[in-house]
Length: 262
Image (tube, rainbow, N blue to C red):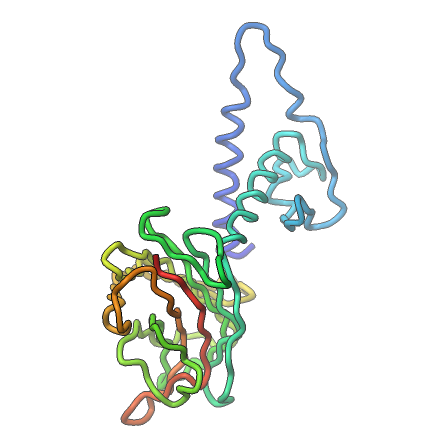
């Protein structure tokens, strides 16, 4: 089992333990509900609740091939949480114009509230402004390349070959092949973005290869936005850059997400 998947397993175990503690409480001779009778017996490695696919082994804790009432309630809660997240997220395909450098297959952003007008919504006063940015990429592991993440009120379209004036810049990891990047960031009330952590992993999680990095990088939107009034429409943009020459060559391979800053 991969370390990324293992972390989710452990989180689920904590949830199971917490719910188990709550289900044991009773007063007097109150009859405890039938938490340990089988509710469903999945026929494969995954099962569905409300259209959400879940991995059977994460919830079948006693490995008897079936989910008890307690296990099924935990799985239902997780499915509902995932559905709530889906209302806050968007996924866009990357743009690939160069075959000689790393490419972005797709980009996903989970915002603060439900998607509106096909834009991710970021609010500094909801969930402390926390949001997440992820990229699925193909990495060449070239020392002459970097991944740049930035925020702008202008689209990256038709800007191939140029480099952003301001960006969070990262070297490529020592991995050739499909790589996922997951940034945890916070939108602040002063119209700045602070990114606090980054997880980099093989997209297929083969061998459990992953790296985590604690960040403390701030990006004031005034660096790239013409106005500081709210709400403000803009973009979250990720691009690979070829830095082998005197100037970085970016935005040939990129992805951008439309965002409303509130």
